[in-house]
Image (cartoon, rainbow, N blue to C red; front, side):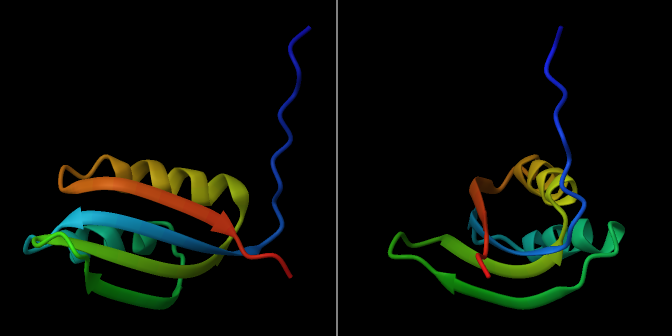
Length: 91
């Protein structure tokens, strides 16, 4: 018998860190993923890293575990994205 994965439908705060190439349109594609899922971005910070031409996005948003997994998977499909990490903010 396969174990049943339970999905936590409670809303939590998540922080997503994204490392991308500094290209025109990347921000629009990332925010579009949140918009399609009707997730409000509470905070967005973008800065250049020590590696020239690479940007780091830090996004705070409230959603559930299943949705954040789908958002991160969508972000990782963007060609210019090198790496995406997320974690839940403990209350």
